[in-house]
Image (cartoon, rainbow, N blue to C red):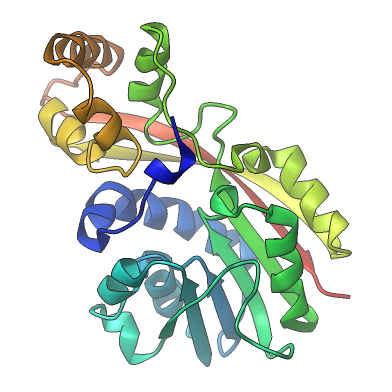
Length: 261
């Protein structure tokens, strides 16, 4: 499946499918960072602003800039309450639109595996953070089966289909993140796993929500109807409902943080 088919051009759909997952993992991530209030933040790959808003709620930043390559995602971000505090602008993670180190913290939330050259993206964050400041990221463990879409992707693989993956999915490995941070000459590099659980009202809620994903949805839409039904049955069996019909399962991310010397 071609990499360019994973497109982020619907902020509202992304909010429904990934916003809740992002906040669940983001809460754990921010607890781990332990950042004090009043910092100047850079949110690289801010998307529709879900994590940016979480930083504002949790960390009371003095300033926060959100950068993303998708006009549609940024348009959604600007409708959030966060837009009263954050500035959202178009930009490329590998060529960030700032000249000098002006931030206390730079973060990538669920982004690094979409950056074509992850090392360049980390170097750009480090370039813009003042000495002593923090550079950090978390990413779904794509290689280790940690994606929120894994229940569907596992059954797709079982019937011989290859789900589309982000272009730099290997960067999601915890060892790869550690190597990227040390390779950018960051100090005091630490990593950790983040495991979060999300519930859905029933299987149909899970299925329709997850199919809003920019990779899974178009892939399944292109499958023959009989294959879709077979896939759906297999996923339903993989995710048994509780007594109330709810579906609950876990996703896993890897996180990394380091300090600019």
